[in-house]
Image 1 (tube, rainbow, N blue to C red):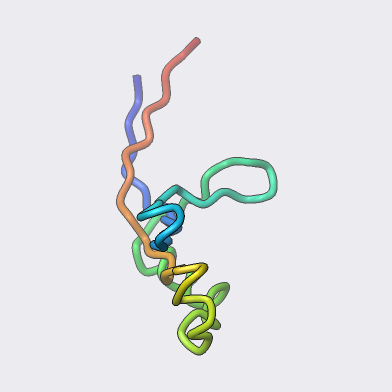
Image 2 (image 1 turned 45 degrees about the vertical axis):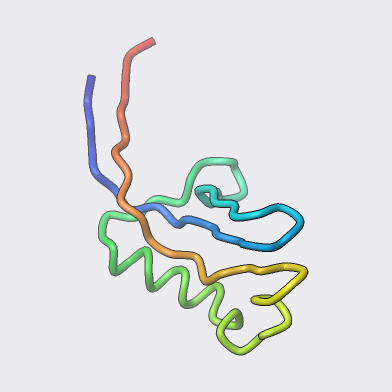
Length: 80
């Protein structure tokens, strides 16, 4: 078994209908977005979701979207 520490992008939203929800964001193939460093993950989120900071209609009800953030994850690989 092999383990590695990486940084993933966490989606966050908080609204009255769904409550507080989070999940790891994935690419087109369904694999989680992973980065070698926190700085790379933050740069990706800032470049792709910069408009959250200027769109109060998305950050308030009914959406309640929050700026995605880089979180540390441990990736474990096992042979099947």
